[in-house]
Image (cartoon, rainbow, N blue to C red):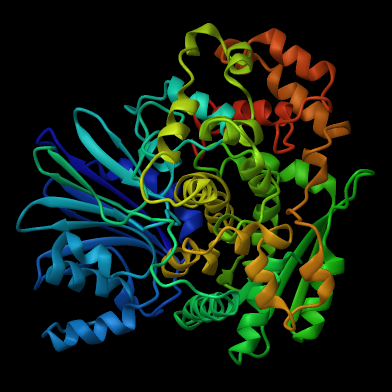
Length: 597
């Protein structure tokens, strides 16, 4: 797990070593254990390492295989690297390290661009072919690992976060109007390749990109998810068994492939609690678990310790609990925002940031339950969408969009007005072939697009801000492929995640299985009042916000007049969404306040 960066000059010039130094500074939190650079003519690689597999210097990066004429920078974990290593050794390849990085080099030498189809794991990497003078970039099937890039007439650059790219003075930081529409209507999800900034793009999940020294590009989508019933029907008992086996394998994969201890982020919900139970079921003892809680509000509790404590007690884990006061949440909020590669409005972003800070003092790797709700149908809006009438888009829009298009036009300045970009995108994604019914369409969209740029990105950014690697078993691509075949009633039945609840019976306390769907609560960001309200008021009333002219003032004034009266359909604060977007721009994009200078 690391931070990667690179520059390929397209104008015949030499790569900028000073720029690479600034880029690596902005990646340092992702990889505190080692820094390395390597160059070859127009190409310069940079790397910050978090040592998890093969802790020796032999696995430092950039990794060069002179015999094969290949160089690599890699972020992620390849869970089947041992099996691939044995296969490649049988084909005559010789290895000089013990980790998963070198396996990618050999896999590319053997299978070329098709090497990605052989990898099971989370990854973003860039590989330079010294003989062909081509740069090959790849991202894992479900976009668990980030990969951003920018292109100017002079150079193509890439990095694990947008902040590293913004270290270059020639990146276009104008706001992309289409991306802005997605940001404010699609719960801060901006699907690839766009980002909020015109000059910063991101590689889509399950995609490779090849660039030659002349700047010619070629991309390929190497995996597509379908959501259809299998040819041979299964009973509920058969589905329960096969999914249980696949989930156990996914959890085990993410435990075994590490040369450091692996813990679990235990929220007290069904998903993370089930991870603990499955690890115990696999024979793991003395497991490290971690929970965080915040101050209560009258309307909502700020912790779920009453659910996580019994799970930790049942499996006798070495449990760590952290209770964080609201003044710490507010004090640390700007720091967390500087670690967001893109603006993230989820309440739990700062929660993960503060939890990861504490957890990273004990372990380098944790398993987390992200993806279970989307893969197995856990959210309250899924059955409501299914029960709706109207077009596929209308059924989705009524329960998910943060703002309808008319409100978006009232929110932002006329310079950013245009057609309903989000409606067009969602209608197109829902209509893609390979889904049997409406719920299949929605869950496939969620798994392949929406969670990539909401909870998955959030967990990566907030944990890697502290050099903590988060592994997500529920997004094992083989498990996802299997789960997408499930009949709808095995997902949204029993109030959601019916099949996971069946698997959990006898493994977890009934109170954990039967409880209503919970969230990682930070009530102060949902019920906006007191010092949090003043912070948001100061942000949207700041000189920078007024001069930027992104928002219409009468809209912000309406939010400020009744800050607790304006919520999205997913119960997010519209004032918080606006303030967070402005704060992210101030801290990460504005020249005077840009991260690390």
